[in-house]
Length: 215
Image (spheres, rainbow, N blue to C red):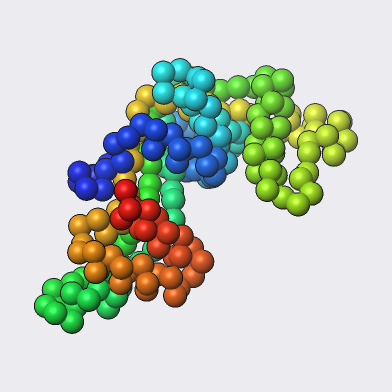
């Protein structure tokens, strides 16, 4: 990943904190494809960060058994793309526009590229533990959290037979926050104000920009 020093996320704790949110990632591999060929493949799947696995931790999740991506097998090099909030930045938001006119549009975002190798888990006990952990993580903020135990046991058992566990054992992480750190403070404030009038997703980028400015 191209990441100039002022955009680079170098702190290991910072990288782990982003992984800890536990959202969906894009898992990218090279291996068997659905059409019977071989090539690059990607799946968007929710994955949890498990810091206890290996030297750098692991991302764990599952794919449908019909998804051939898991057939790439143990040891296959893989990458997970962890995407944070992103948004278009209009040059009209910069005070510099009125002073020099020397401004152009850009895009602000936070992203991690998590590199490692695959481990495949087809053990029902491992899979049930994973599904429970994923469910508990995402149901934690619900007013009436759903539990795996709310469904019939035979239904859960059948559902588990339809999935395969995926573990991305992490070798290294590249992180980038492109949040106007190379602009003047006035331009950053202008972009934050502009984003705050847009969508809720754009407002999340404004929050990230405030945090980056205050670091």
